[in-house]
Length: 190
Image 1 (cartoon, helix red, strand yellow):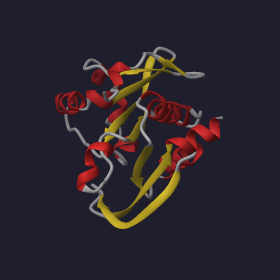
Image 2 (cartoon, rainbow, N blue to C red):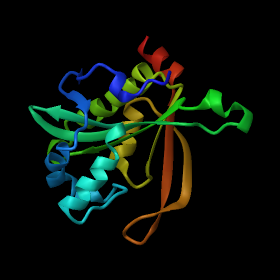
Image 3 (tube, one colour):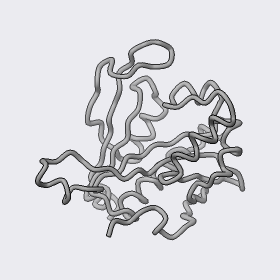
Image 4 (tube, rainbow, N blue to C red):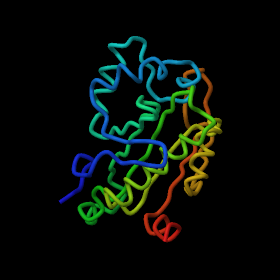
């Protein structure tokens, strides 16, 4: 049986954050800061209206985790189970053994380490909760803040892909893939 986010015990608490599964009504709480230009600079989805944002939010609820700080949502992320590449005859054994992480932070709380705390908790959820064997995260190479979070939580830069991503600015930007094996994550903690 494959473990999914809804099978886990919620909420998950860190030193300063409470993480829980995202809900449809959370879209309204996230919208005021998610739509800011400094956030939209690096997100993959741009919603022009709150209704568009709600539709996009609802589509991602199966993988959505939010982080609350002092009673309000300040972070939204995903822990998305994936099938890693495999040979066709091994596809069933590989199914769901990898997870992709993603996160977005309210700019008003940046600079306090809460992004790193949130991303580290997402990593723990993927490794300990979903029992995947490998975790990945991707970003535009120019997104220095996200790269620093990946470094701080122990992920390794596995690839830089030149001009692979078309940014909404119209420029082709380099992309980066970061990853960590579950056994490496457990060894570092243990």
